[in-house]
Length: 208
Image 1 (cartoon, rainbow, N blue to C red):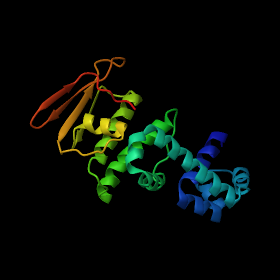
Image 2 (cartoon, helix red, strand yellow):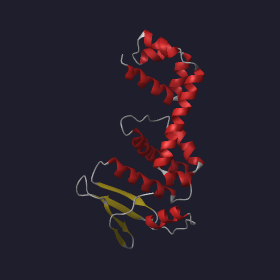
Image 3 (cartoon, rainbow, N blue to C red):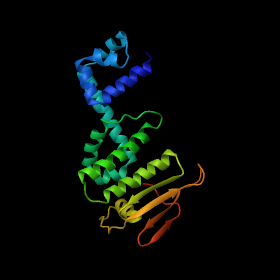
Image 4 (cartoon, rainbow, N blue to C red):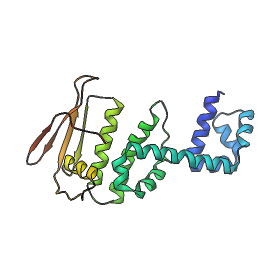
């Protein structure tokens, strides 16, 4: 078994609380289930419950810190609620690869969309902020040539109000935002389809 495989097992133990509890109770069973040999299981068994729980907490808070950086406006409007939802989400997904923080943030936006709707978190425009930042992350990811999503309010007015810390009082304006680029290296362009008007934006400013 390679060192990277052992590290992957540890990462899963640090991420999932149920697996971590099982490991601390019976490391042999957990180690065998992952295909570790006796020497590797013995090595992992030397970790104390304090060490495991401390590192698990540190890892989750590090992920949360990166999430706050990548979703600053969502963090701003949700506050402590974002922390609560993140720790709930962190039990469901473990990012890997060279862009793991970006992938983590994108997966978290999808989780938030489901849970904000389920938990009926108000105000309603919070979902618009989340969808705006999810689109921005997908642009950074560099996959695809078209992105679209729906919004319940005027997106430009909403984002400007959050940047200026002015009161966010918006009238409902259902619309669909569509962003596209013609080549992998061209700039993103976009427009909104709203009722009763059609609004076109050239190179929309998706930035913080």
